[in-house]
Image 1 (cartoon, rainbow, N blue to C red):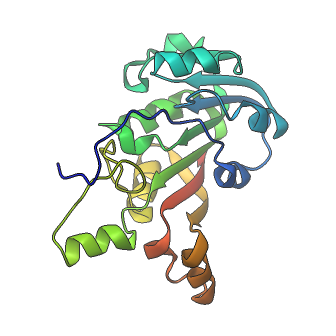
Image 2: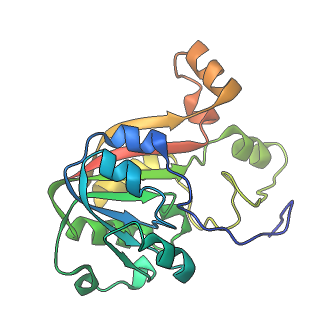
Image 3: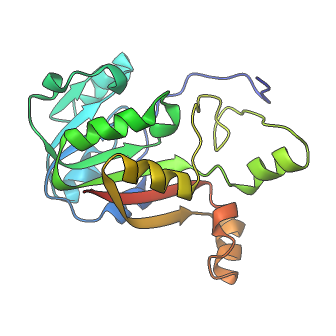
Length: 214
């Protein structure tokens, strides 16, 4: 595995993903936050209307901090989580922000989340964009697939998604995509505006989607 810098430990969930939360919109009822980190989303989720927050966070230290902000936090990897640990309740909203790319089998997890959600529940997902130009050019021109300490090519990523492959993964596991968003910034956003979004699939570092339980 080629890297430009040595990997460093990093805990996700320390910053609110405001763009994904805005795409999700107003909340009502219970929220399951997969990979909740230290629980930084708590205030924003409650302000959006969430009434009960449950987090899943495998890092023990982060989970301990999240318990001071969420109603309940389960400190286990989601792939190993028994449904009974969730108290036998279903959720109105599920968040999987920067999670699926870290899992060996994200498809099984999406199916599990479907079973833990109410009919009509919403699922908010963010993943890195595998069609980002830096990834594509590195492969096409240099034949390189170089991992880095953070970003699209984060060394902890096990799976890769384009919008089409994420759409397929959601639909085959019982989720119907409702709203999509390409996440660009700086010059990439300016160029995306100038091209009326045509360039977004190659400039966006992240893909956001809100899906509904079919």
